[in-house]
Each structure stands twice: as C-alpha cells, then as structure tokens.
Length: 399
Image (tube, rainbow, N blue to C red; front, side, top):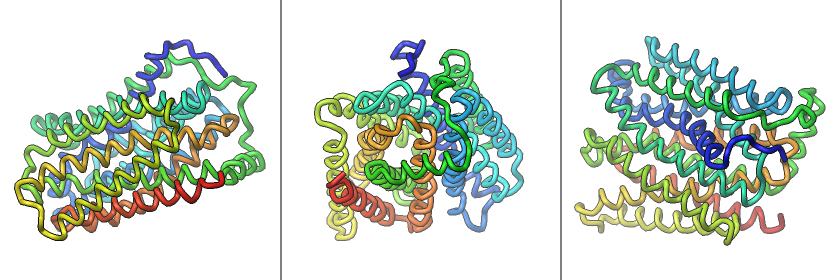
C-alpha cells in the first residue's frame, strides 16, 4: 500500500472536489435547459435535456480509456491530459451555434471529465480497500452530494447576469482548481513497479479477470441501475417542477434543498457500513426505495393523494432517490474493487464505463417519456430498484 503525503481529511476533500467538479458540470446546467431549448431547439424543447445525458455518454466512453492508461503511466499524467480535453469541450460549448454542436461539445466535456471520476476512484483503491474504502468513498460522496445542492443555484445566479453559455466558463474554472490541487499536492499513488503494460494481451487478461469476477460484475450492474435512477431524475426534475407544479422560478432552490438533504445518505453509510457490512446496507436501501416508489405510484395512479400533499411528497421521494446513491454506489464500488487492486485502473474504467453508458441508455427513454406528470419517472425508478434488488439477492447468493 502506497502511503499518501496528504492527511486523511485533505485526501477526502481533494477526492470530493474532483468528483464535485464533475457534478457541477452536470447540475449547473439544469436551470438553463429552458433557455437552451428556446435558443437551440424551439421546435422540440424536450430534447434540451439531452445536454445532461450527452455529458454522461462521453464520460462513459472516456473511462474506458483513462483507467488503463493510468495503470500504465500513472494517475496524475492522465488527470492533466483529460483536463485539457475538458477545457476544449468547454470552449466549444460556449460557442455552439446549434443543439447538435452543443451535444457533441458536451460529450467531449464528458470525455475529459472521465479522469476525475475513474482515476480518482483508482487513487482511493491504491491507498485503501474493503470497508475502509467504502467508508472513504461514502465521505467523498457526502461532500460530492453538496455540489448538486449548490450547482443549480450557481447556474441560476449566472443566468441572472448573463447567458447560459457563461455557465460553462465558471464550471471550467472550478474544474481547473480541482485538477491543479491534485497535481500540485497529491503524490502519485501508483509506483512505477506496480504499473501494467498496455499490450492487447495484458489488457485482455485483466479485462477477463474483471469480467470473470462474479461480485465485480453484479456490483457493476447494480451501479448501472442506480445511476440510471439518478440520470432519469436529473433529466425529468426541471420539467416536473415547471410543468407539473408550476415552480419554475424556485426550481434551483428546491433542487438544492433536495440534494443537501440527500447528502445525509452518504453520511449515514459512512457511519453504519463498518458495522453492518456493505451488502446489508445495499439490499435494505434498494428494498426501501422500491416500496416507497410503489407506494407513490399507487397514490398517483389512484388519485387518492390530496392535491395539497402531492408536492411535499414528491420532494421527500426525490430526496430518497438521490440519497440512495450515497447509500449504495460507494459500497458497490468497494465490493467490485476489493479483490482487483492490482488492476485498479482498468477495473475502475470498465466498472464506470459500463455503468455510465448503459445507465444513459436506460435513462434517456424515461426522461423523454415525460408527459407533464411524475408517473414515467416513478415507474422507471421502481423498475430499476426492483432489478437491482433481484441482482443483489440472486446474483450474489453464491458469490
């Protein structure tokens, strides 16, 4: 295990800022979706939400590249190169004359944003493993969840003074600060003796080891379903607040409140995972979210919910959906990586790439199915949670 020069607190804060720079790139755009639709896609305003999923799509493919390269050349050089790609995507986003160009630029941004996510996870695994890794990732996720709380408010403030294009400039500056902190303060966590070849045979053997590891595969599948829940929620919330509840002007404040409350999920996990274990926490969380979603769906479909309580219930339910990320994703990552520390970069890449790209594919239909009500989103979340619960109970029974 390679020692870190940074204190425990600074290391956690650094990882949180790296992850948070990715979250800001996503959530700061949410208040701008109506403006983007009006300017670039007036005939099909619902397509503006693809600005969110295209970022994830690029990030998913980027992780396939960033992880193996970091196993060969080290973590910090990959951070530097991907930061340059991210800035190129940002520059193109600010100048995009059409929605198609903007979607391409967002995918390029996502490609560059892959490094903070996948390399950051590999750095954590270089230094920690097992439940201790799960605890650290939970703490990182807790701080990371604060970014969505502030991002829409940040986006709304920028919109009050300028165009939606200025949002890209601001979040790029914050990403530069995060990467500079890592490059200047954090020593390389992968020593030269532990680096692996980029030869096709070595990559195939490492990938086969990952794909043959039952726990890693099931954990990745569950991460995919959990991330699909988050992406579907992010894609639909702005429309729900604007069209279902007529709260367009207060969306950023409410979304910030939801994200801030949801951060408690990561805090709770960091306190209980060492005692209860990762699998128990994951299964209990999926089961609880499934029951809550089915109860909400029954209330909406039956019309028995009084109109006065529909909005508060939606806010509370949204908190539980995002909090589910903090209670599951860190644990799932630690489970997948526990026995794969010797191929941490490639394992993190495969795990993140598969979960991100497939989650986008699953979430886009849910977002585009938005019909002015919460029903498509609640149906999608219920399905994803049920599938994840089955995978955890059946897929890992003999693992």
